[in-house]
Image (tube, rainbow, N blue to C red; front, side):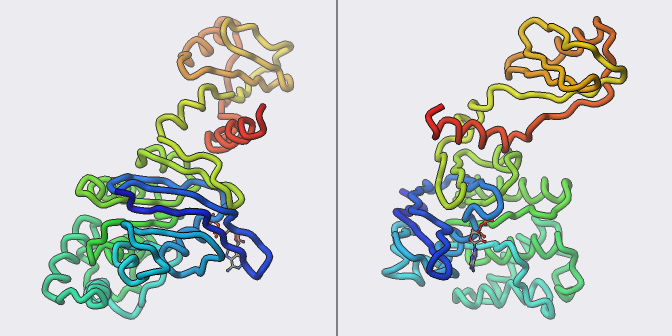
Length: 306
Ligand code: ADP
């Protein structure tokens, strides 16, 4: 069963700007799926269309087999959405927000309260259940939005940039919570522009760039394309020429900067040992491009037939 099936999806804003240029995408039921892409790629537009917040220009979307053009209410009932922007009633406390939300789906306050307590507890904000939401931190509000999206126990949870602006500790808490939900059977789809987030959580991935899907595959397969990484090594003392290190490509960029390319299976230790043997002390080392940029380079090079 496909949780999501999108065909030929297009969105043109203001009659001219094409934010989605004919997207085909499917997500299997039970999957943990990432829609990855840089800012402005069209991720929020795609999610907006699925959740009926944005009107599509062309194409079709099925949610758990239900076409959004034929029965939008039923299609929507399968979805829980965590938007990027906070859209909470800040004057109500979390428990009230959750009970109200459940009411839209015909869930009784007694059941809603029980579920709310469980989610707020798992997300570690149960102690804020009766605090006015305006007094919650950004990270707490984000968690409350996750609980709200789950209150009707949807088959699919969609999160738009769930950890944007969230610190590392909280990011891990949210990640682990999502992993548990997925294990319990919820299909999870998230958008992100952090490759690390997609890598940590997701089994399958689509990469979108300028309104077009440029890759749609298993996470594991995609990452195997990243078979090498170039490091920029800053040296303490000036270096006259690039050291020759067997098996590694080295380039001298300037007298304090070396670029060294390492294949995935090669241990970095060999580089350090070789530099130490040549009395080259390292002040700093960093990746030349981040891995997402690298992945884009790889993908677009392939698309151009290079
Ligand atoms: P992402 O979520 O990947 O950052 P978006 O879907 O928000 O991308 O945006 C895709 C493109 O559509 C961007 O160029 C953005 O400026 C444009 N866009 C988004 N919403 C609107 C809108 N309401 N009106 C006009 N252009 C929009």
